[in-house]
Amino acid sequence: MAADESETARRERAVMKRPVIGFAGLTHLGLNSAVASAARGFDVIGYHDDAVLVEQLKAGTLHVSEPQLAELMRDNAARLRFTASRADLASCDIVYVAVDVPTGDDGVSDLTPVQMMINIATAAMNTKALLVILCQVPPGFTRQVSWPAVRLIYQVETLVFGRAIERAMYPERFIIGVNEPDAPLPAALATYLGAFGCPTLPMRYESAELAKISINICLVASLSVANTLAEVCEKIGADWMEIAPALKLDKRIGLHAYLNPGLGIAGGNLERDLATILAFTERYKTDGCVVSAFVANSQHRRDWALRTLHRLILDERPNANIALLGLTYKENTHSLKNSQALSLVNALAPRPLTAYDPVASLDACGAQVTRKAKALDAISGADVLVVMTPWTEFRTITAEQLKERMLGRIVLDPYRVFDGQALIAAGFTYASLGVPTKILEDL
Image (cartoon, rainbow, N blue to C red; front, side, top):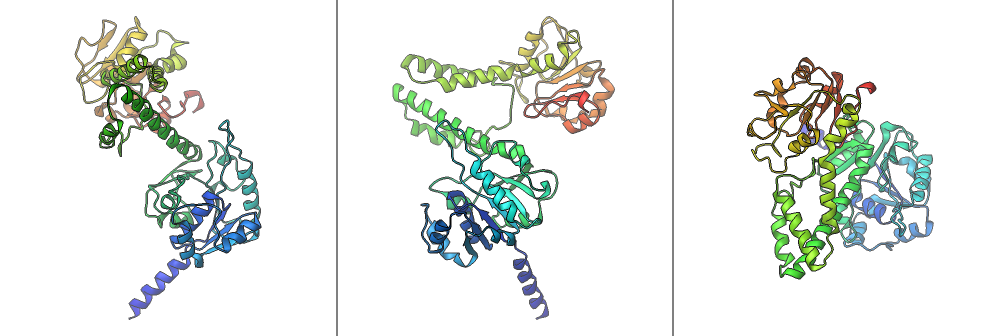
């Protein structure tokens, strides 16, 4: 019996320790988020600076229309308190700034309402409370907010009009921007987010802010592709709705979509299909600008290694010794079709190079390239190392081995085969896709 009573007491204490959640701003974003939080069992205080709107909410009159919102708000009324008094935010453990961000016809956001609500909230909050920016803001915004960094959070919102409550109640994941991504989340926030039963992805503020934009850009890309190809279907007799289910069953487009940056498109098949669609758009006078943009972007990214080499060393030392690891267009294949490595070799001609690839044919490169039988042999004596294919065996090479074998201290590793932090700590200038280059002089 005592054990049962102890367990009951433990559960009661756990409930009592649940943080009180505040939402500053009760427009579409704030209201749906507040109701979903109450439905997840949290006491919620919803603040808005419009007293008339607050009174309407107290009476059950909604100013936004969303399926299930009215029912869920009614069913969880005991845990919801709406107020026009900013002083009520002082009793919250977490305060979300959740105003909708107005956007002009030119696509530029007006951040004035966000900053005003931040000022209101921070003036009223308990100094130990967490401040969470839930509005979409440009990268760099959150870091400038005047609130202690250990209690300042950015959270990506992913609500969709017409499905807002569903998305708020059952998110796929939480994307959380923090000052120190490797540190544990504050206990109150971890308790709150944990109640939703989905993964939490902490990252630096700027990454989280850009993640929201990235999600939307990917959505735009998907819609643009569908629209472009659907118009082609109209001209050649195909049916896009027959094709779409096939794409959804492709892991590269579905759950396992390609999101890692690369050195453009290679291998031949994708380039061929792009050329085919461009030919169709020319023949049938449909719009193919998005496909042209994909091609241009691929060509631009293909030259990343060459541009980076010139920036880091070749402009000052044109005769620097360069070592290449990988020649095939990707790992686990012998194909050299449109290989980015061979493109780099040709661009650097007639400069002599040293290279290693575990499967590429020995005649893959011209006389300017000296092939080695082992990766470490290719690296020996190099001023700069460039990894052009992310073969698994390269991942076993350590910073100590590179330091011992190389004469220089510059590594270009677009696919992040190596431990970049270890290389930086060992005194290397390290360049990769998607992150700023850490220059040796800055160490």
